[in-house]
Image 1 (cartoon, helix red, strand yellow):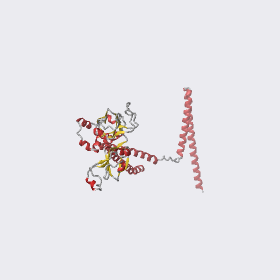
Image 2 (cartoon, rainbow, N blue to C red):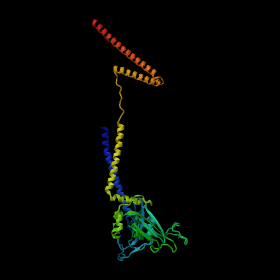
Image 3 (cartoon, rainbow, N blue to C red):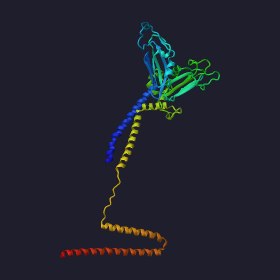
Length: 420
């Protein structure tokens, strides 16, 4: 009963522990869902003159600038100009160094904050006009893929269905220190960087939300940022994400594009191939984690059943271990108490001891008699029987004599009492 009561006392604790684990798991799934939506979708931030602009990405991801604009456009995002003459003119202006400045300050950082002012970008593009800074960026995960292709070749990017491509960065040109990347024996490498960061728009237009795409690397596709004769290359940072997640995060892309072919629909209806269940040789952990989350989201009943079953099995094993431990603590060795023996039991015990001694003697003699002949062994057995009978007779005679003495003592005591 004590063990059962202790087991019942543990029940509320186990219930609260299970509830705590479930709550933490749900919180972790919510945080992971928020993380996925942050790294899949594109983000934008804007601020007017005199205001701070902040770019932020979650943990395990960094900022990847897509575009930047500083100036005054047709859309009036800030307060109107104080000068009525300027207010009447609907003109646009922009700073040409905006993208380079934002890249140098915020690229590959997790958090970035800048004061919006024309001094940050050099010369004021339109003095006396209220201007604003607008930045488009993505949160690039730490686990991603990178592909480099030299000028004059065709870059092919592919993802295994049901995953699709998402582009985080694309640069065309040549950077300093990359002498072994697409080397050129005819011309010397440039003394400064010549990079075209606007290539990300062309690559995204050709590859975004597709299973496979091809891009020709050359000046016909991208604007040439270097001197003539410089051999350039295209560097693309991308990742493979499940199509269902991308559809939920950016449904406008799938609704605005053309409908997929029949082959693509069949591939999406088919179950995941066996190869996709094994880890990819490229070691892209991010894609596998996204696929796992997609499976959980598409099969919530199965995921809940597996989680509940694992929790129940863990609770049963824990309860068994606790009950065994409590039982071992409660149990004590039994108390073997020695009871007093009566006179007859003492006599019987003595006789039993004598019999055991005789049996031991018989065993010892039996081992010795193995060397004696059969006739001598029979004579010894006859003698042992006679000795045993004589000892029994003497023992009975002693008992009878003791009883007679006890009776005589009682008679004398009775006679002495009657004479008085």
